[in-house]
Length: 126
Image (cartoon, rainbow, N blue to C red; front, side):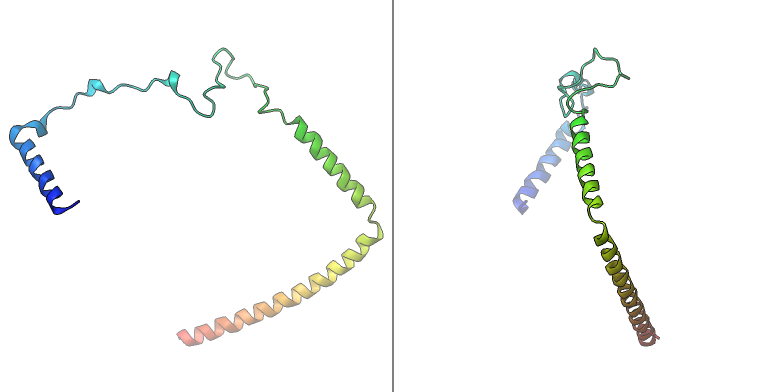
């Protein structure tokens, strides 16, 4: 707001104080509660008052049988793939054990480096 706008606003408030319109009571009866029956939202068109409240509603939104069948097929195909591996799984387990030992060595070196960094940091601060 510019200075002129501020001056006009202040003068308008001063005028309201002089003529008494600033102290006018607010009519609270004009405000009403919102009508819930016209409210709509994600469930607005699906609400049905005739059904009991505790009854589970079966519709296209809660039917997951198609997905269950699909997941069972995927699990079965993964099981079939695992059965065919045989000796290759032993080779991968040997490679994994070598990889784990090399990772343990790397972790030990990193821990040693962090200790050196922390000691140097303490010396610089102290």
